[in-house]
Image 1 (tube, rainbow, N blue to C red):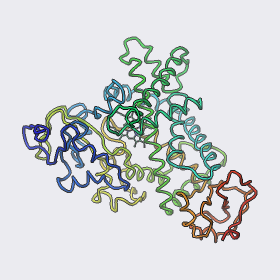
Image 2: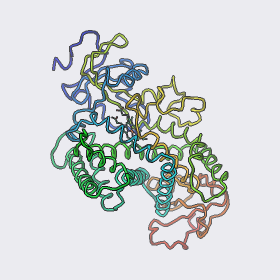
Image 3: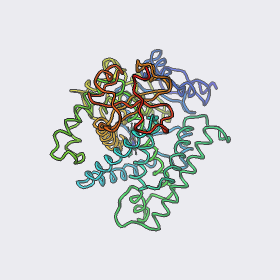
Length: 501
Ligand code: HEM
């Protein structure tokens, strides 16, 4: 305990406290919180010790950095002074392979995949596939009375990613893979107690089952390799068949699992956050709608799909995405370990210590972003929009910068384009909507999102009700009010609001 609390060092260690032996201050760090602000634990420590402080995290002495210059040094010196590192519990969960050792493959293969998809023909196909997925998903969503946005987005991105990575179309396989990933995610940040019933146990079981599915898919692919490489799994199979390749089957499976994990949870969270932020900020939504309506108006053929030029012209959309990445803080901590003794800012950090770069401390710093907690995409006008700028590290930085960043942005932009040009929605939570609407609908009524030409539905006419409802539907939109048991209400039997008041 003494040695844990007083680590040896050839100089002055950053200030801070180490917490309990081994456990350190992990529990405080993982305390859930509901605000969009910096984690209260980090905030408290920064106020007390400044932007660089020491703590104990996941069994390791750790230095947390909220210092911009130090963050840059950490990203730029990857492989020299610092190296990617994940807490040991994560390595255990992810299998025997250290995730870091997969970096070379990840980089090469994801680059290949992206190049393949984003080549001259690939690009067109990619946009059309993404748009098709957005259209079918939104159609499905609009047929439901209400939906949990976070779950629904997750499902959509998972299906899309599984298709691009594995060409997996089978509903059952997707369902089972997704369930296993969900179990995995739920226990990823939990106490490592491998006893049946615990979240950690479910997490390990989820991973085990998902790996089994991936293994049988890989075997199938190896038995019947395709002539043309069309998904990411094909690249892996091709590489496995090469003589002298350092990639083995176990690493390949770890890689597939990691990629599914790295891409679906992050992108779906970002999209959910964007839609929520748009709902909460009507003026931003209006501006976004205008940009996308403009794209539709500028088309010669109104039925043609999105083109790359159109995508590139989405200036405001990119600002919305940047603002989302800044505020959503999807990856709240990026981990490294020191390969040698580091001297910085008068402090000495011994070799072998963990370093945690904390992006929210930069993203929510009021000296960089005025009124940092407000969702204001226009703040990006004239700012460095590159996703790897020193003020935006949602996708990391340096050589480990997220290889899927461009892919994630295209997915988000295409989905938002289809959402704002064809649909309207309203956030509801339980019976709240009844009170929020300002009308006296009985508790339990729902408002449904509709396609613009819902002409068969009985209209509650005029802009008045729209304004009264606090909804921002343009004139001529229809609102369908349904009884709770909407499944039994025939489409043409719509309740007029006046009869409910
Ligand atoms: C909004 C969506 C996303 C966010 C916020 C995000 C965030 C990040 C961050 C912060 C890193 C740096 C990790 C580090 O330095 O240790 C990273 C790396 C990475 N991301 Fe993403 N990511 C997103 C989407 C994706 C997608 C769609 C893919 C796959 C197609 C992907 C695959 C990867 C990979 C392979 C790495 C490199 C891991 C390594 O080199 O160790 N990510 N991502």
